[in-house]
Length: 322
Image 1 (cartoon, rainbow, N blue to C red):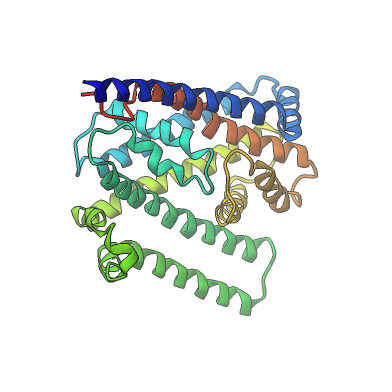
Image 2: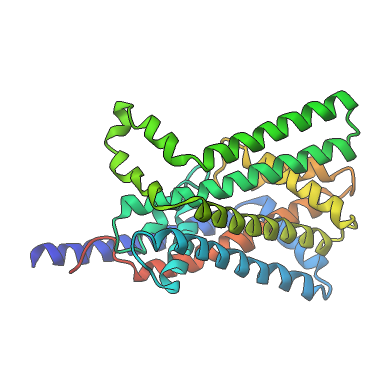
């Protein structure tokens, strides 16, 4: 009884710390960054009845995270069936938790707090879903960069064929590794440092190639939505670029942003903005609009869901109370 009471107190304290810390850090980041102030001012300056574009971006955000919830539920149901609400709560709190970690790795741990199943196995399942997204992001990002080099930079014939070869090699390696995760995990299980966690890695065996294909398909839809959101925001801020070229530029931008080794969601929008400016400046001499589009996408896709995820965390039990 004493132990259960202690867990209830710990749960209450942890919820207060998490939610209070989230609000404080978001306040510091949103109201102490000059880039955000510039983007907000530029947003209101350009908001002249373009309700449809902005509304479309918000609807796509809801669709984006809904697809991710479907993808995650597919993974977790193999361990322990969960409801749609639990999947959404886990996804949103994963967004919240990921904001404070490099490359958003905290998303893995954040999601599993919504679960009552074995959390270590759930983390492995979540990583599989993230790997599917990485395969898609790298594949289409590299394709975008290839098309950017061919059609925008007019690469020489030799560089074009070299780039195509490297792209196909990357495509093959990514998909070979992804569809053979069970084989790779067995090979690495012989390393002493991995023997302790191998009992959890066996979760990979629960999924077949059809599951991996579905994960990749869901990831593709999410990637397409994310690119379309940025393109719509560029149009919202006054860019006039053909849709095909805009998608190529957006894929190139996201590819470079993805391979950033120090990718902390709350502080890297300066880097994100600079990458976007590099690719888009040749088509519009308005870096403020580019920065505004980048930060608006960041606010809609990460910050708003993170705030909702902070409220969702108030329902979680981080320590067992029963």
